[in-house]
Amino acid sequence: MAGRFAPKPAHPDRTAVRAAGPPRAATAATAATAVPRQATAESRRWTPPGPVDLGLVLGPLRRGPGDPTFRTASDGSLWRVSRTPEGPGTLRVALRSGTAEAQAWGPGAGWLLDRLPALLGDADDPAAFAPRHRLVAATHRRRPGLRLARTGLVLESLIPSILEQKVTTDEAYRAWRLLVRAYGEPAPGPAPDRMHAMPDARTWRMIPSWEWHRAGVDNKRASTILRAVRVASRLEEAATMEPQQAQERLELVPGIGPWTSAETVQRSNGAPDAVTVGDLHLPGIVGYALAGERDSDDARMLELLEPYRGQRHRAARYILLSGRTPSRRTPKMPRVDIGKL
Image 1 (spheres, one colour):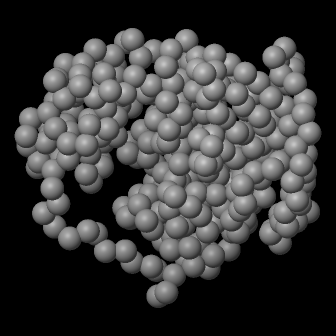
Image 2 (tube, rainbow, N blue to C red):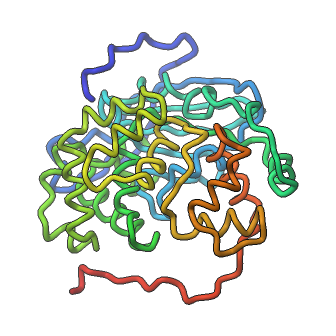
């Protein structure tokens, strides 16, 4: 994807500031290319057209509490590290009196700030959603700041989604954390400690097989990631497509199915209708919330969400935010660490 985007002119409401911070040591894999921790920041202010809840909008981009690419600060600001077409970049976003204040560092700073409105849901249309159930309507009223983020980046959502295939979220989060910290680059700028940009496509290809094993990633998921990064530039093009076309592009890669493609385009494209099928828990949650049926399958879930066609992913978000979920009837799926085998 690098080089596919023309350089953007500086935004008129950006200013340059200096950001101080101690240098961070790079890992052996990235020592030659790591971005200095002390760097010049660019900033931008943007006022959303409606209410925005940073946690609701950007929360789905976080892959577990130890995600090296995402951090919530004590002052309420959110930090993200992304690998953009122009290189790694660190973004800090905070809301002050209804205005988003953002600073960014690194080669990808300009790219991230140019797309700040899209990231915070400016391309989303919450007014297109009409609640059809009392539970959904109540959650809709309580959560006016829900908007769908659009990152414009495919691999940063695709790879962790592949890691989440057929395993517990704890296992997937651990694998993402270990691999990004071992092979990614330290975050540019004064980011919180131990934040990293994920590896580039070439570095993903160079990870030895035993390191995948140590991170708890089986050969099937590792092979899917390797197939994806070999055609990284083609997959990144999906961020500019309509969501259905984007999913079809992703699913051309063996090992990527409807579950993974939906989880990806929900984030990369801000897709309001990309409902996740093939999930272990979501059909039961939707069925229980809307019809009191805890044993619903994908077909029944889609039937119940049909009144929301065009907005089915958003409807599922409101259902999950309602907190109405069936009680657990079986033990939690055991975690299996294949790295110890």
